[in-house]
Image (cartoon, rainbow, N blue to C red; front, side):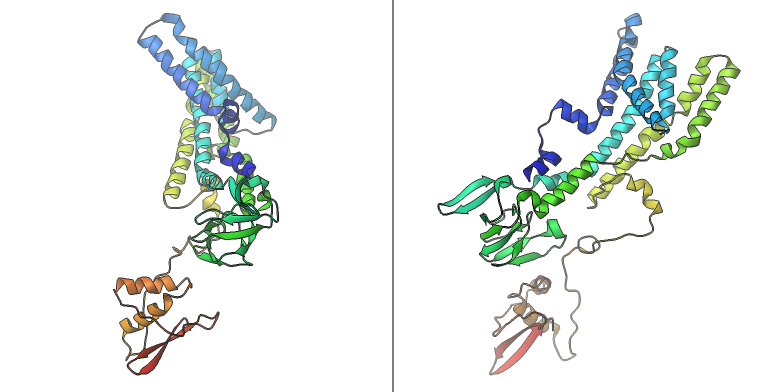
Length: 413
């Protein structure tokens, strides 16, 4: 299983992997920005003469050529979008020796794509954090005691010890111990699940306060958590390209802009008129503004506890007609609270709450904590009931001996 987690978020950084993961656009944008800055310094500060265009040459060779090649590959696939106006502007400006104009368009084109990639990476950061939490070592129980082994060396039938507050490394079955596990990372439910001999445990669940011994039933790579990580890895490797608004306009906007440029060339008699029209028509605000808006939306959603896996849905959400929600933790907080106490007119609400909370202190029911919290808020003194028994579907009855006679109380009946 560590091979999955490593593929998602734990590999060592290298230039080749960084380039494969982030693409060519971020380094092109950085190089072009530095080249433009160097050109301005050489021309207006140090005044070196004709040599001030050398940085622009480098940016066009290192950045402009790869971008044009990428647009050419899109043309072979019959994909024509707003980027094509930027590509034509780069070629035209270069042919007319307007190298600064060409470099600025290269910066706009590569910078917009780099911001898209940043938005995608930002959107999946929470999922990569999920991958990094998986343990790499496990405690194997043998005749000679407990030894540490790599998680990928676990085979079905191995007996493992899960210490308090550790993450279960594989799916298995409890063979010794009684305790609780937090499976909220896997199920979305905020409740702690009781575990006893015979109970099934899931990889990725967090053990609570007692040591549990389990018998592995699956390999680590076949366990529940590994399958979740595999979905994350496939999502990382197969992210669809965001369809920007400008791309949808490209079918008619790009030809119209080129036609106006040709008309300006014919009327003005110089190719610079064509360049001016095409550069002005290049939707640079859309190339950069839309990714920035996407990043802003993802960041705002993340601060409110919403993880957006695919940034392109922010452009498509206006067309959605049906939404599905996981209620617990999404529409509710997953923390029940006591809001009202309804009892007979002759009964006292504080007494009812005190009896109920006295009984609930021995219960594992998810609603028990809500009643106990309400009693604690009112600073009630709890008593000790007798004959308390919690039977599934039968409520939770108990008895109190009070001044010579017996009273009964019960909850969730």
